[in-house]
View 1 (cartoon, helix red, strand yellow):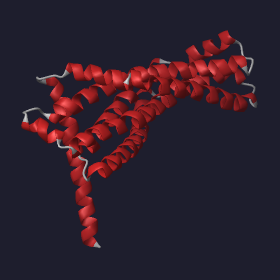
View 2: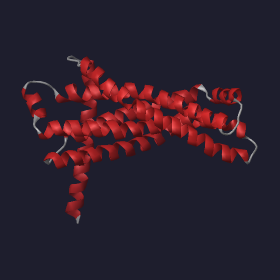
View 3: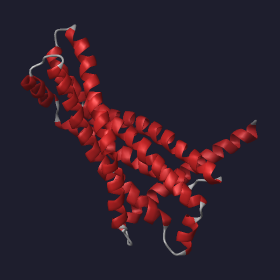
View 4: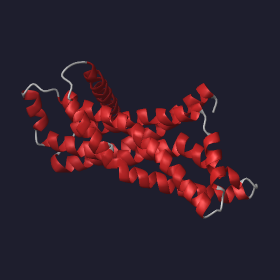
Length: 258
């Protein structure tokens, strides 16, 4: 039993090492030529605008459900007017960044893994190296920076539509005053809450791009390997996002006290 366990541990340590080297190489590639800005813009369009519908729908209906659930509990304490405060804090600090990261992970991390995996098994990656092109600089770096950049804006949209969905339910179904809802929503947010909500997408975007590209570039076994790499990319990226969310939340609470 010692040998299989030892081999398993070695494989996992080697995978972490390869992932770390890939991530560092992708970050460092932006600070030296050549830079593929056209690819960055293309990925921004694919990742950012392509994800708009699912992000808007997710944020909107999450805000609606959050308002319904919170109003039911707050009514018992006579604090139903605090529904807007609960919705805004929950969306901006936690649900907006995390749900956006998970949705984009399911859509784009899998896409990156399948696209690069297909290039890997058809030996297009080897052809790029033979022509003197760095695959990480050409394929990974544009996806990394496009994902990090666009995820911040997608998170802001998810927050806004979530608060809007909460307003629709609170005003239309629960009969709350519209000015009171938006007033409590605005008053509930502080600088620390905004910072916490915008720091998380930076980590989520980094995880989505690097994990998706890592599994894509390490695809083995033909078309079945592409499907396996796609599944692994989504699962690992989603788990990493949730774990890092916990760590970032604890760090932010330690810094700002809320």
